[in-house]
Length: 239
Image (tube, rainbow, N blue to C red):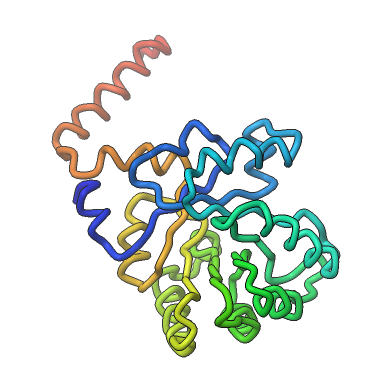
């Protein structure tokens, strides 16, 4: 499979990063970020990041997070974020740090037409809460953390297939999109597509590997052997 064939799948690739130098990649259809990624990229002022990220996104969908744990304050911040541009989605966690669910705020914002990205979804119950709060007046992205589920020993493909089935039950609400989050490897793009996901997020590290798809396995074997040999020589290992 090569990048052209990736484009021919039914899934969209979103870059999950606050490093703007990667925002112009031709395979990227949208963008997401969070406070952890913004801090990692060296951003100390949220508003400054927004002012540069919006034009860098070029009108493609971009999700910005609320930065409060108070559910009522989430609603206030969401309205501020939503007003930044038409392509903006507001990231709302499905629970706050105390474990309180946010479906009431999701329902309120969705009914007002605010585009939402419901994040940190792990369980079927959480997904159902988000869908139950959905309104056909807006678009909603449902970010299920498939990669972290795999880290816990779960089967992310089967989990996402069940998630897709759940979303399909709400097929009358055609603007609800299922997102495979916390991608761990390039082949997760294929896994996500086959599981019925609409979107997958990738890190800059995964994005950089897409250009190598379809490369010769023999050539990659040779490159690997050379790498190990060169590292042994540089380290001065002897027996």
